Image 1 (cartoon, one colour):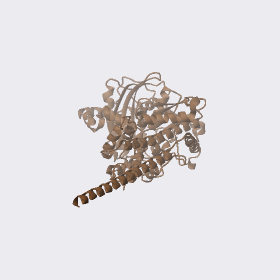
Image 2 (cartoon, helix red, strand yellow; image 1 turned 180 degrees about the vertical axis):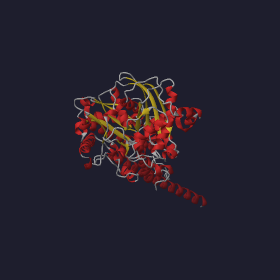
Image 3 (spheres, helix red, strand yellow; image 1 turned 90 degrees about the vertical axis):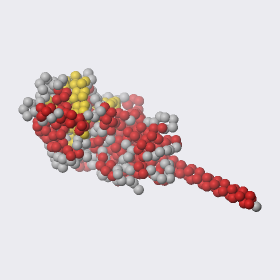
Image 4 (spheres, helix red, strand yellow; image 1 turned 135 degrees about the vertical axis):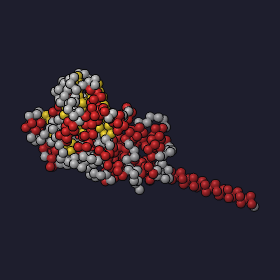
Length: 548
């Protein structure tokens, strides 16, 4: 009797276990189907077929025309600049430049030998700006830059002195309003992370020049220009067919050369062409493929309703969209286990370089995907199927962003009437284009699909010359006709350099940030560029909080 009871109990236990196992299997299958539904819907909402791309391109052309004729009729406001920022290709000599970012700046020196010769003697040094300087005034910021520039020039001028009263190219990796009133004034629209209290309305070029004079540097800034204009200057130096430049990094911008006669009051400057700073991150149209995840990202940002185009293509936001999709799946389908990983709830945890690494993982089992899931989100294990899902989400987000960027490049060429008969060069700078191979390929393929074999060759998209920040060198060349000289670049009166050498300040500067190694500089070039400019990095201010 007892044996029969034991057997019956065992049978019942096995039966119960079998039922539970079946239920678990059905639950897992149900969850996986839901995961697939979320993925399919997301892919559908992000789709960018060629007809949609043309809608986007034509909407951009319409907004460009409206902005040039009557800015009061559109939220998309473009800013005319000066073709004096563009060189002719015959400038020669040794030039210095500064590229100011949001919490650091890049100092450059290079030799130009004409458009048929490459850049030589390139030296670059990145310097972090201390928080106490950033929190001060514009005068404090420019004084710090001049101090470090004095050291940089002294070090390099021992072998390659430059002419006195030359021009210093100064590019800024965040929005500038350079109105037509005076090409020597750079009026700030906003400082990204700078808490500079008196920035608005300052004549920044004059402040820079005052700082340079204070530290005995016989260089002058003619104008502060957007870093993307510097990239256009570099392209124009080597090829007059270069009519536009685009930055694709943490943030994004585009500039192009426009006929002066279509710009109100443009002819009064006696120029046939003017440079237009598009600030195309502000572009918006109902034809943009915006998903529920993009809407949530926008509503929780510090600038809801603004810079929608940038939030779709900027490297600042690509990884964040991927994270939000993964979070929805983790909550609704438990793809990472019954407990949602805490780090997955933290906004802006996934950077675009990590997204690119997962996306471009070609190993059989997506080993890099697993490494990044552990490194970024603390997810210790995942199935190969889940890792494929992660890679596919990255692909959807990157493809959408790249194809939209390509469509708007086509839109610029369409506006200028340069698709059917003229060959045009568009220079592109930024980590997304330079280092994210799949993103770059998607961008090129979108242009080819839109224009077809017969016309695609008329729009040549190329990487910018000299790397990140190098546009400042070409701006200096455009603003200066002074060739190199053996005369030292410092006035002997009130020379700061002597004081610096006495205090051995060069070593101190290395500690502050001039001692960046090549690896650190490459990482900065990958994602800082102009990219750090217009992206709302303050969106990350809440990164310490978690989404519920």
